[in-house]
Length: 152
Image 1 (cartoon, rainbow, N blue to C red):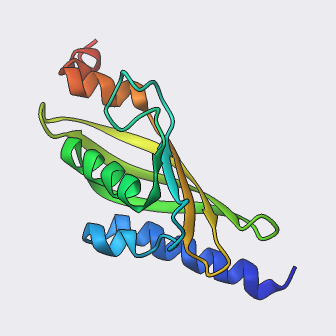
Image 2: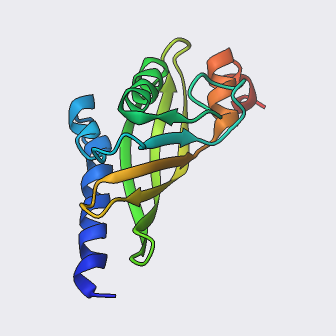
């Protein structure tokens, strides 16, 4: 596999992740996605825990709905990414992120480590976006019970 493909995938993943870390507007984040109508986003977790968990958001409208739903529930600060793992054969990149998240309706916050699995098309645009995060902390913060645990 040519070295430049690994480098191109890494640069595409860094550009996508940095758009989050720098709190770029939704249109700029979405510009990192493929023009394919088959793109999708999925955040792992029970769908009952948060409105953006456990269901596939398909197509451009679906991915836009995913990011809109997340941003209506959560804010974040100090987001950064590290440990990029590139699979140039499958056009995939895995990356670890950290941030402080806040459930905006309750104001409850938590520090989190999360992971992205990104699949890219041949133009180095995101085709699929999967997230593994602390759905338990999100749920407790949503219900206003996260601080109760911190005081134990």
